[in-house]
Amino acid sequence: MSLSWLPLFLVLLSLLGGTQGAWNLRQIRNKLHRQQQAESFKSFYTRFGLPRGALSYTTALEGYLTQPLDHFNRRNNATYRQRYWINEAFWQRPGGPVFLYIGGEGSLSEFSVLSGEHVEMAQKHQALLVSLEHRYYGASINEDGLTLEAIRFLSSQQALADLASFHLFISQKYNLTRNTWICFGGSYPGSLSAWFRLKFPHLVYAAVASSAPVRAKLDFTDYNKVVGHSLSDPVIGGSAKCLDLIRRGFQRVDSLLKLGNVTQLEKDFFSCEALRGPDDFSEFVSNLADIFMGAVQYNGEIKGNDVQGLCQIMTTEGMKSAYEGLKKVNKAYMEATALKCVENSYQKSVEDLNSTKINPVGVGERQWYYQTCTEFGYYQTCEDSSCPFSPLITLSSQLALCPRIFQIPLESVQKSVQFTNEFYGSNHPKSSRIIFVNGDIDPWHALSVLKNQSHSEVAIFINGTAHCANMSPSRPNDPPSLQKAREVRMQIVESSLIVYTGTLKHSNLLN
Ligand SMILES: *[C@@H]1O[C@H](CO)[C@@H](O)[C@H](O)[C@H]1NC(C)=O
Ligand SMILES: *[C@@H]1O[C@H](CO)[C@@H](O)[C@H](O)[C@H]1NC(C)=O
Ligand SMILES: *[C@@H]1O[C@H](CO)[C@@H](O)[C@H](O)[C@H]1NC(C)=O
Ligand SMILES: *[C@@H]1O[C@H](CO)[C@@H](O)[C@H](O)[C@H]1NC(C)=O
Ligand SMILES: *[C@@H]1O[C@H](CO)[C@@H](O)[C@H](O)[C@H]1NC(C)=O
Ligand SMILES: *[C@@H]1O[C@H](CO)[C@@H](O)[C@H](O)[C@H]1NC(C)=O
Image: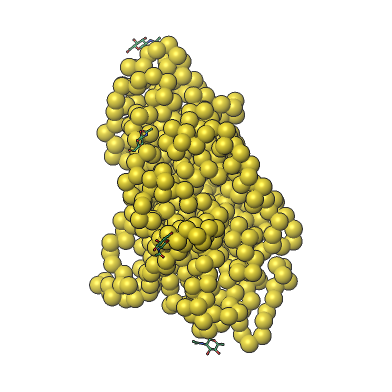
């Protein structure tokens, strides 16, 4: 397929860190989607220096593979079409390695095989690049859509089986025999990358798992604990004073809610509609917290919404109160995202998640919520005193959506989370040749593998970087810690590759 200029509006990598959050975080995620797309686009064309108008330059092939809807019951003959991308440009036939980029909770685009750190590595190692969109996301949704009945076959286990079946398809298509496969993924796909190696060690030689929350957790209290920590981290422009002011600002908001002075809050924070009771209150404080959570999780990735900027506002000389600081942060956020008002209606959120309308480009919020209810939990709560925001961000308010939207009983959510950890081994998976990369700013690192498990499972913990920072194309202004991590990772991938040169070269480090 020829490249078109349209993909600016498509989505690149699904490394968004599934966050239930509220409406604001969904805006932030989508904004990041667009920005990453634009950046990949730019990086790709800079790297290859294509002349303007070179639109027929063929690099990425798009295709669809017919997959069983249920890999685990072949008496169900239903199928769906799963989208994939291939970039053969760097491949040394027939023996060069295969780099598999794994899709997650959003659509993929051709840039999944054209841009990013894995592409830089592929170029260096003359690898065949392939990527697979996750079932039920993007264009890979079965005909019945996202109804309650249809969504049953959405799970990480089915997704791994899809990957196995894709491995077979690619092997047959290119007549591959002994080629070394390495899989890559970030965030939820980072977990899939680790799990693909764990469950299908005969198919993939090594895995890179960036910011991968491999440990499922119902009540993900630690998320906001890390957020608090990052907001006070001077390395990225945070401070103890900043954190304290944020905490006090939220205390003021909570007391206004308690005193029933709701109209004041609606006015001060530009709520689109009146706040009608506890559910809206919860949505309102979540939206406000989202601005901070988003700034931490994507620190340095989104212009105008980073820890340094927020803390500058909060700690401005002469600010009347912490509450005023929050108002300013909210205003700045609204200006940066061109919002006229903030959507705090719980009912609207429920309707959004309940909508079966397919969004072929972007994050699949409904599907992702379904996966939290049936596999992972990951609810980012604020009921613990380590959290600087409002205790109205509760587990029960987030859990309540499972029965309400998907008719999944509350009790089963916790059981599913436990089973997920039993099934995959939580944050101590017993496998080998998995490289776990995390940034210490990123709240998701709390559920990942941070310590070297054995000599063959490697953990890289980067000082000062946020969610999946290592996956984007390398930039001249990358912080030194990230540059170093890229080098380490490059060496590890290199040493784990069996480069086909007539003789097989094994690594010392990872064999
Ligand atoms: C699927 O199975 C049903 C019976 O269970 C059969 O009627 C139908 O023809 C089958 N479809 C295909 C495509 O094989
Ligand atoms: C596939 O590869 C094998 C071994 O390299 C070779 O003998 C065979 O002819 C190839 N088949 C095709 C269809 O290319
Ligand atoms: C409630 O808000 C009004 C302004 O709308 C303000 O005059 C009043 O002092 C507030 N009450 C409390 C208890 O904060
Ligand atoms: C979700 O949508 C379905 C189908 O349109 C409807 O029957 C159901 O009442 C809705 N549930 C909620 C919680 O809005
Ligand atoms: C794990 O081992 C690798 C290579 O042996 C090393 O580079 C890395 O720093 C270690 N990670 C941690 C968290 O100690
Ligand atoms: C992280 O990097 C900063 C400078 O960028 C340095 O001051 C700090 O000591 C580093 N922390 C660790 C744990 O290496």
